[in-house]
Image 1 (cartoon, one colour):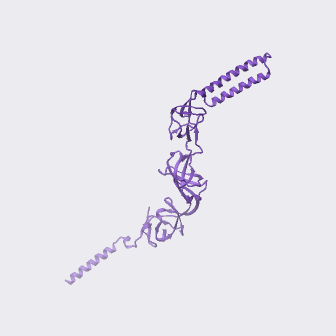
Image 2: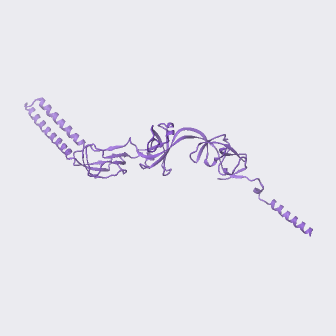
Image 3: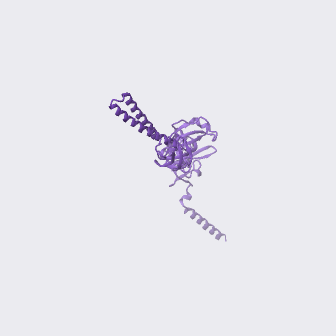
Length: 349
């Protein structure tokens, strides 16, 4: 009986030893973590101040449209915020009767002065008029022509006048309505040329002293990255806005970007205040624990921990400083599984 038990034990041991000898090489080898890596490189980054606000018409390009004579608004063809093209009729105004009377009087005065001049010329030819009388008649004609030209310049030659768009743009404000009587040179419409837009932004008061006109600003619509471009900071306020409790700043929006934006839409910007060099690494490569931020570099098949300081946290590629070695790849995917000195193997990302 004992002999049979011993034989069974020997058979079982042999089976186990055979299984161990046939185990996959990876199971017998020291376990390692599969990782992907990237080569670190030095890049220029920028310190920046975050700002947010809205798109607005550039007041420096804003036009107040008016007419040089008074009258009655008979037709209003546009509303506030409407896009228009050069030459579009914005409104029609029936000319004030008093302005029409002035034009007709000027026209009649010119006809009378010319008649007098012709009569004086005939008398002068017969030696019945003096040179001074002829000069006075000529001056009367010149004065009458100037008065009529002024009436024509004011647009009083017709009973109705159409106000047209001076260029492609947007009607920002409508000051009148159909049936209103307006005086000469009264504001009728406010017009902003196409693409003449600025970003009216606000920054935290404790950051405003870092800013100066001329700094580049990366602008982005809050509705997506398609409308993103660099503008220029051209005004920094010196007082806190009582409504937003922020310091107002103004950024000129490039025409290419402005063509896709709507007046009044929200926008944000990063104002680049200064530049510096740092190691550019993927955000996923940088980890953090109680000792602070760190990453791993691949050295001789093992993970080597390197303490870093995050200098530029924005974006998928961030800027860090620290004792990185340029010839050693930085571990990206798989880094969260590692400890200092762990064996690693590179895999295809």
